[in-house]
Amino acid sequence: MNPVLAIYPGSFDPVTNGHMDLIERAAKLFKHLVVAVLRNTEKAPLFTLTERLEMLREVASAFPNVEVDSFDGLLTEYARRRQAKVLLRGIRAVSDYEYELQMAMINRKLEPELETVFMVPAVSFSFISSRLVREIARLGGPVEGLVPPSVEHRLRARLQTSGKQ
Ligand code: PNS
Image (cartoon, rainbow, N blue to C red; front, side, top):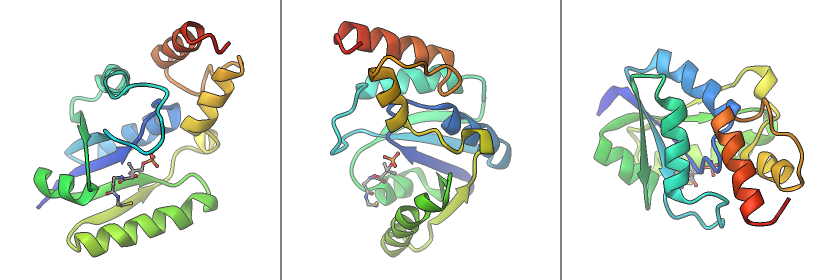
C-alpha cells in the first residue's frame, strides 16, 4: 500500500468551494491525491457522472498531483485496486462526525490497513454542502462564493433547461 496516495471519495453533486478547500489542503500533504466520484449512488444526482467528473477536472487542473477518477461498488475495493493507504474525508461540524465515524469504522472492518484521515475546511466553508447548493440554485438564489464559477454557470444552465428556475 502506498502511504503517499490518498483517495478523497464522494458524490460531488456538484463540487463546492468546501471540497476545493480540502483538495487544496490535501494536495499539499499527499504526493498523489485521487478525487474519486461514486458512480452509482442511491440518490438521483442533479449532474450526471460525466458532468461531475468534467467539473472536478476543470477545477482540479490547477493541482498537478490531483487526479479525478470514478468508482463503483465498495470504496475499500477501489482503494485496494489503487493501492491507497489513506481515505480522506472532510468534517465540517460535529453533526458530520457520527456518520463519518460509522463509515470509517465500517471501512476499517472491511480493510484494516486503510486509514481514514479527517480534515476540516476553513471556517468560511464550514456551512457549505452540495445539497444546500442544489437547493439554493433550484430556488433561484445566488450560489456565488459557494461553488467555483464554472460550477455556478453549469448550475444556472442546468436549472434553466429543466425549467426549475
Ligand atoms: O459525498 P458523500 O455522498 O457523503 O460520499 C459518500 C461515499 C461515496 C464516500 C460513500 O457513500 C461510499 O463510500 N460509497 C461506496 C460504497 C461503500 O463502500 N459503502 C460502504 C462504506 S460506507
